[in-house]
Length: 237
Image (cartoon, rainbow, N blue to C red):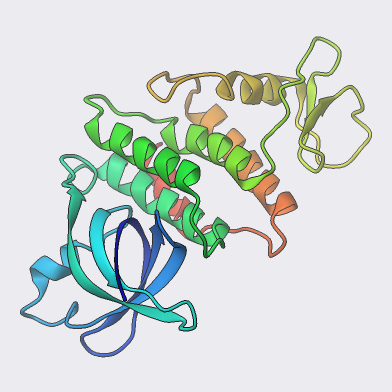
């Protein structure tokens, strides 16, 4: 049966000489895998462009809940990027965010609120006239709330140390995996700023991003690591 849905490209895996399995986060069906033919052939350069990280698509799909892989009948761009693939920093951020989403989203059911948050964030990154060096870190903090482990906003002059394992600010520094006071204050500040505001210098950004990745690892059952992190770190030096 044919269905219409919007989708976000998260990851592709080669399947044969010319085909890929594309992991897409869809508005109607959540995370789905699609077998896409003739993507990697010499004559399919335009089709391959549809499956770059975070590309926003409008699809007509065959959907069978009993199958692990679905099929795409028709596809077109929901939004044509103007900056993300063409600028080094936004391209690296897109690759990083796509990997974050690929390694965290497991829902095979519709979640329009999460889908719309991700879509709006991607559009903001693509439409920004200025670099957004903190964007990927701010995105991860916002995303954590949708995933069910958003950091508590209970920061105060007494509870000024953030516990990565508990997700709260505390006055107890004897428990493991607690950020120091400076980084805890920066984390709290980042929880309350819009994407366009740059809060951190390079060293702070690197340190805090590593802490947020560690925070994700504490709260995801299968752990959490990112292959795209070294590329991102090199670009934002």
